[in-house]
Image 1: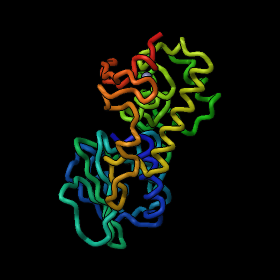
Image 2: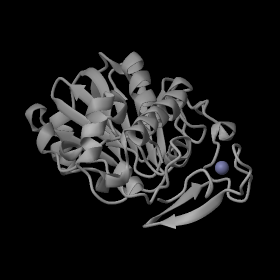
Image 3: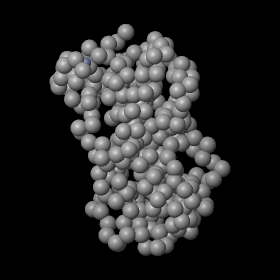
Length: 269
Ligand SMILES: [Zn+2]
């Protein structure tokens, strides 16, 4: 699933390549991804020019002259810029630009391509409820959000309405480097735990962001991200020795998700 490093990377690439382009056609193969009817969508955005692309959590926010185009890849997918008229085998949504280039979107399972009027973004049922991008927070802001939460740590970090950007891929190494158990109760975290967590989030997400995101997602030009399996320390390595203490890494059930932990370095207190 694309998380903050991948979506931020896509936004940066799109910002370099798409600003100034005019939306000239839409081919929509999966109309369920829309939040309005196909007719309304086309009427709203045909002829619009792209001003800027940003991201919030797992959403790409395309600011156009006629409102917002909002893209979410769901469990994964590709957004490819094609300039030679060729199309990848799998695609569910094509945006044709007036210069002949195309933005070709594929969802592995499902995804969203939504429209919102300029002044309606805050009322969008999902984007309007997202918390701030987790990397944009200062430590005092991060601490203040965390201190208002109750319940278990991992569930809260994955809750996009509190802080946006972390999913179930990077979380394992983040918690390992912070030496925190995914099921630990937030009120039990002290200042140094929160500092370690903040530092681990920045370390992990920035490392991937610097490499253009994870290898299992493609960039705008079809190349995989530079964050590879070698960069993953604990995640998906059950049975392998912990790099710090050699205790075998465990896969444990944590609510509706699985987690990978070192039971010795990440004690549940
Ligand atoms: Zn360990």
